[in-house]
Image (cartoon, rainbow, N blue to C red; front, top):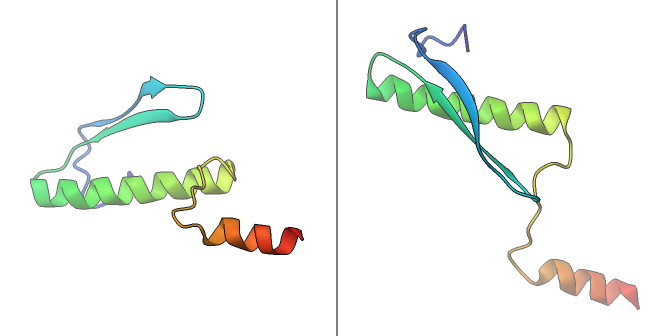
Length: 79
């Protein structure tokens, strides 16, 4: 974040706001000089955080099927 031109250097904070058996909820606070830059910074931080988790903790994100296709494929190949 230090190299992001949208960050004004004032605020950077991360907090765990909820912790359950199956998930952790975090809140990231960052500051910028205006709302447009803050939006861009928040999006960038979110994407980099997701990349970090995927690279360092593979399989940590829940995988949810939204269609029945996956179940149908397994049923068809199970015999």
